Amino acid sequence: MKRYLIFTDLDGTLLDHENYSFGANKKTISTIINNKNEIIFNTSKTYSECKKLLKELKLSNMPFSTENGAVIYFPKIRFNKIKNSSSFEKYWKVRIAKLSSKIWHQFLKKKQKKYNFLIAQDLSSIILKRYTNLSNTNMMLDREASQIILWDDNLTNLKLFKKELKFEKDGILIKGSRFIQISSICNKRIAKKLISHVYDIQFRDKYSRNTIALGDSRNDIDMLNSCKYSCLIKNSSGAYPKLRSNKKNVFKSSKLAPDGWSQVLYKLNKTLDNKIF
Image 1 (cartoon, rainbow, N blue to C red):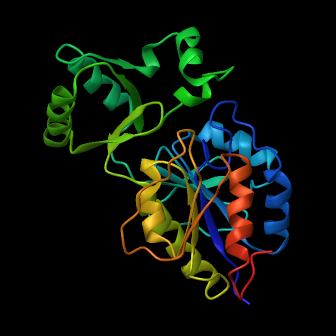
Image 2 (image 1 turned 90 degrees about the horizontal axis):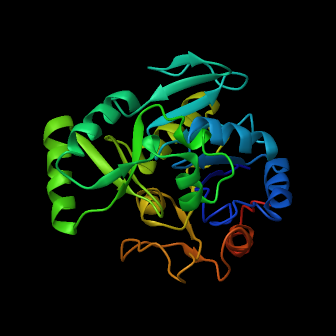
């Protein structure tokens, strides 16, 4: 019986959007893992943030994607060396996004002369705590291949900035619930595809190609559209990510995160012949 690859967003999906609690999801995760399925973080969070949470949830042997698909990590204990990867701590690291966070910071400093926006890296911890509710903001700033900004200019200028970003650095912006990420080309769909491909190569037919994804916001849409089973978590405004009109196998939670995460997986599980748990 083939097991599932379950890709999940974190903030507002697995975790409470305001206080970052995973609630009762740890018990659900344990049940899913005991049934030999994989839970794979696909998030805008950084390596440092993910590493801490993976340890808390006993998922340290799982691969994960950070900074909206900019960098992917595969644990060496389970995976052979990945093509185009480098060794980093206990992981094989694959960087999808070309340019470093340092280069993006330099680019953004120049653009601040023309546009009104704040670079998170340049803000005090007091100000960042106000925006994020995080007690420690150091980990969110420990970025490898992106920067995050708070836009404080008009929509017309945002469109101009986006064009310059593409033309000058072949860069993109990815809107999150709090910040806009600036990076080279990457997204959660690309990360999900690469991770799935590595599983196919290294584990043959052990895992189903009918992947599962969970998300709550705009930056999850590409990932959700590319999976067989799309699990949408209701966000704080009562809305869901808007998927393509012909997308099948869509499941919605009626609860917000963190409770909505387990709820929607139980809802999906009832429809499956090959059960998750």
